Image (cartoon, rainbow, N blue to C red):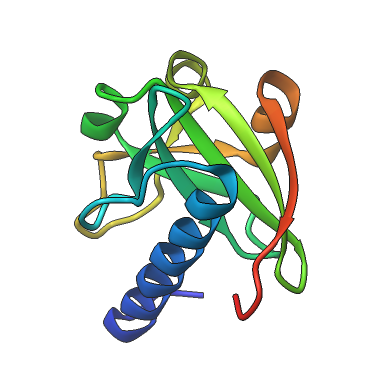
Length: 131
């Protein structure tokens, strides 16, 4: 399914709400700006959220340069998320380019959930109401 401007904006808004809620649950600082970057246990991280039928998350190459880790939040059931921490160097080594033909083409690296599960550290399951 192709994303439209409206569906992209809706997805972005959902991702920001999800990341803010998870940052609070994890004890991280509040994400700043549009990036979902925050501090968690003295490290710079970004929180990336994926709906139940999505098995990957993406981070821009520029952002990855300033991160210690990527937090992947993968929805498993109606507001419940499996949370994984993946060091940025592993994210970089395992990422593939996005298939996007739009503005993110050549700028975003995608990593599958199985990479987080294989090489990452579980931060448990958390439920977000209204996600």
